[in-house]
Length: 99
Image (cartoon, rainbow, N blue to C red; front, side, top):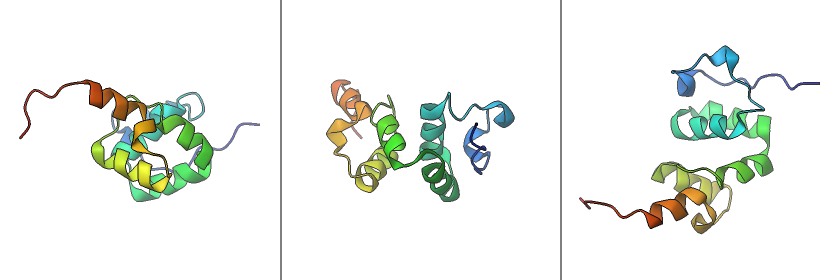
């Protein structure tokens, strides 16, 4: 039996057809969009729908998170930044200018 869709807002999914999102098949993308552009209520619902362990599995594999989202996830889910793929990738890419 398939889970009911989570009760999240469309705010983070403004550029796609929300009704066609497969929340199981596209787990990592859904979590990423909620972390980057979702509301607090979306984040709470995401935690209920996917569970903490599934979210932790997915976020450490993400190729990009904003500094804010990375710091929040590292703190909240108690995962050292060095374990995040996006952190490792950002360290290996030199910045052109530092303002």
